Every structure is written in C-alpha cells, then in structure tokens.
Length: 259
Image 1 (cartoon, rainbow, N blue to C red):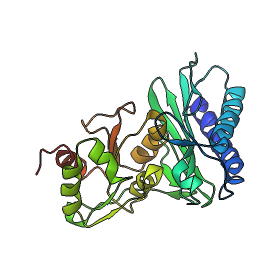
Image 2: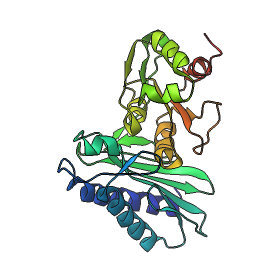
Image 3: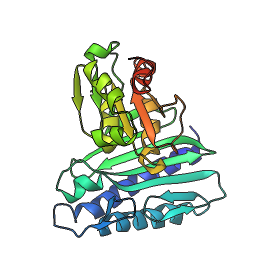
C-alpha cells in the first residue's frame, strides 16, 4: 500500500473524529441557524468543524489542496486534495435528528482514493481506502446481491428534488417498481447501499463535497456510483449509487428511457 495514501487515510480518521466531537457539543442544544444564498442552513458548528479540519490536515500536509463546503477551495501542489463536508446533514443536525456526519474525501491526481464518514451521535464511522476495502467501524462492508427491482430498497433525500429536476414521474416509476423506499437522505442512504441494507440511492442537488468521501466507500464495497448520465462526475448535481447489478436499469428508469 502506498505510504502517502495510508498516512493521509489514518490522519483523516483521527481528524474526522476530532471535528465530529467538536460539532457534537452543539448538537440538540438549540444552536443558532443562518441561511446561505442557496437556502441551505449553516451553523457555527459547521464553520468551526471545517476550520479545525483545515488546520489539522493542512498543518500535517501543507502542500495538499483543500475544498470545504463553507470556506471554498485552496489549491495545492502535491497532487492530493481533501474534499470536506464538516457536517453533512445540517438540516437534521439543527432539528435534533442524529443522522449527520463529518465527511472527509481524499483525491490523488483527480482520483478519489479514500473516504471517512464519522457519525458522532451514533458513534459509527464508515471508511475506505482504495484497494483496502470498505468498513463500518471494523466490519467489512459488501453491497447486496439483490438482482431484481421487485426486491430492491430505494433511498432518496426529498421528492422535491426530483420535482425541481423535472424527474418526479420517473422517480415515482422507480418507486412503483421496487419493494421499499426510505427517505434517509444525505450520506446515510449511500452508506445503507454500501453495507447491503438497500440497493439504490438516487439524489439530485448534490455538490462535490457531498460525494468526495462517499465514492471510495461505495466502490470499495463493490457498488457503483455515477451521475444520471452513467459517468462518474462529482461536479454534477445528480447521482445514483447502487449495488452495481441494478445500476443500468435504475438509470434507464430515472432518465425516462424505461417506462
């Protein structure tokens, strides 16, 4: 295993826990909420956690790049870039719902090679390093082998996103052809696919920091993640993750090809 990859991966696991514990002290405490120009919420916990991560990771690896949701992009020269969402699930965080996480993705030469997702309120961590497998805590993860939509579980964030994307009918078509649907949203639906609890997570309205940590975990668990055009691109607002077996079929439905 590449020592530079491993060193950063281990540093990310420590930093995610530190940032998550920082945010946890504000959770369910009536923290003040501000609203950004895109109508998404932000708190002092989001900003403080990202600042902690930036100082910790760049303090150790100063030549690396760093992209965070709250404070933007800082180019680097090493070929590595950290992609950070200090609190994924801020809407849940501010409503006292424990499904939120500190997410750290790591890129090398534009390839996503590691992801760490720490859930402070649930005391869990999902993590993966390219070539080393995906894990929840120390349990190895593997996507399910469900091969038919009739037995598949589908996760999503909000039906409103499909309406905004003009794909609400296509989403309902997918719903009608699957066994169960759950609106877990944010990172959590992706992790349920990675651990084999469901087969499809489909979402619209995402950003690169929403996916940077997720891609290595899904792929190392044996799954597949792409935009709705079938290509991996974390800059696009639409995404579908699956156990791989049902990926192409789900894409055809969400794109209105299979009615």
